[in-house]
Length: 257
Image (cartoon, rainbow, N blue to C red; front, side):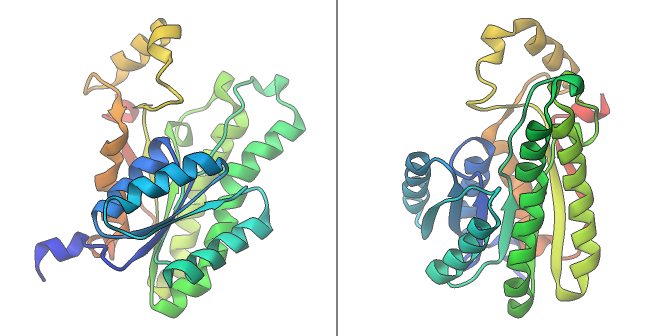
């Protein structure tokens, strides 16, 4: 096989939840650059439309959907609309997420439920919904997006967030075991500290925290959004057909420092 074909996603279709900005859009760009058609599913319709236009400008088909991943009916509609508009679904990137930055004693039951619903329950529902399509097609790729808090306790950064991101890893492993016979590979990516619109104010507003984090990263810098592209394309392509249940940190060495 030509080496380039290992990573070629031409004709494949990927759903990226939370794909209209930040790491989600960065991963969508990488998939599009490899030839995949993209379904962007997120809450902000205006941002989703902008992301969809950007991806179409890369020469692929792209559709945008306004989706609240806490609603099971909307997840079902997301998958059905992707198949209707793009013909199939080969790749699912469970990227949508939220966080409540409170200590456990300050966290309400409603806040706990919201974070778990968005970060974990929705990933399960989306995976369950794409499964029959992938099975019928002869295989597929499911990628869960964890966090450094899949490894470390969150403390004041949010117990439900840490619990949900730890669960995302175990979900990815469980799907890998359950669906290996169907040629569906399920893996997880754990991003470290990346500079996005959600973190861009930290150097200015929290300089001590920014320096503390930077000092722990062996590479000496925070990641750029597009630096997740190689990993997500690998896990979405034929190059990873014998990789399932894996957990890959993309963190500049933060987790091993």
